[in-house]
Image: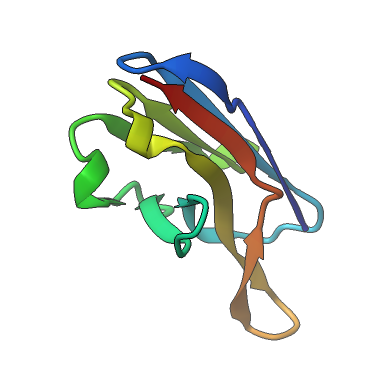
Length: 120
């Protein structure tokens, strides 16, 4: 299973970006998909996550500005980021909990990370 993230870049404060992450490979089912971020010198933190049924969770710092969504048919998760702030600057990683039938449990997979830089 591979996760391919895209959509990062450089944007001015107040601007918007949309991240995408597509899972490929031998996929039986995906439970939770999410986005994490890691700024220089800081720990990786949860930004948002979404279950297969569409329930969402957001970090307090992004509530009202970011929206997570997914297309289950395409095994893809999106993160629409609006009203971006300089403190949103980080490498953003997608994550997915993928069912491994032979193990009977979900395994966590990570994308390669995409840089988001917000200038003031």
